[in-house]
Image (cartoon, rainbow, N blue to C red; front, side, top):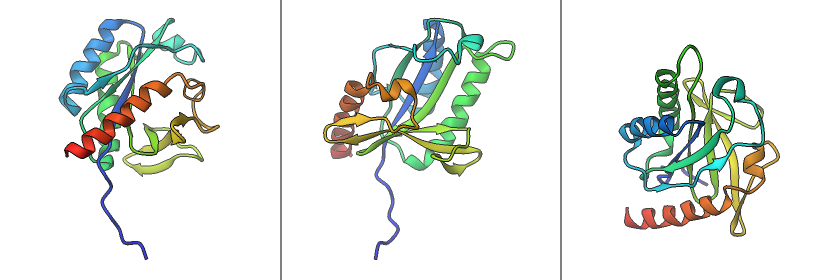
Length: 174
């Protein structure tokens, strides 16, 4: 029989989608206040698999990932609600200047928070769902069929393998 247990801490991650680097810097200041100083930052990846955000945020968008010190995964809804607030204060006239998607990485997966219900998402609380976007198996991350196109194509794989190595190191130091 299994008994309830506390989860291991996770590496909080935040994807920042933006067109103007000044918006990235503004978002980072607020993220630091929420989660601490980043422990790892990705390169900027082109956001070129959809034009979904183009009417609101313009063209030539890029995505940068920030990883933060270990936290309890039960805080994920709080991170999502805080990121929504950051987006709202940074936006102008009903549009966002940056799209912030918080989540976490653990030994086997990358989970992002969402305010959209879907069959593959699990409700947490306060209008926030958990969405498993990548799974780790046999030395690589892969995107399930229901994930986003830029997750499925593998462009983030090397970065998240590096995050996974960092995660193991941070757990040992805890």
